[in-house]
Image (cartoon, rainbow, N blue to C red; front, top):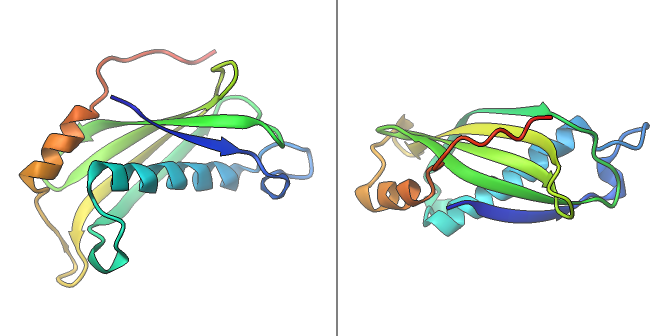
Length: 140
């Protein structure tokens, strides 16, 4: 099951050419990812935050523009012992055209001990419900 976040491109998120600035895509992915983490049950309390990012990437497929309505679709691609990978698709909300693809690896982490921890079973069960069911090609 995919999680969806809606975004409207603000003027300040565009570059001198009128396109969405490449850094803005990472902001959209972060917004979608943190909302997804809360939905999954990882919590919203920063005093007990348990997720640290190990990596993040974004592939720019098509140009996006000011005032465009986007939809970020997030799913779990892989679950390990203490880490998991989220994949994202940024699509035009009106026609479904793929604008960008993202991926982020997260680690379940004990900030006090400064080390990774095993993902608890109840959170692993929730992550599994959001696993990618099939590979769909959305490229040109």
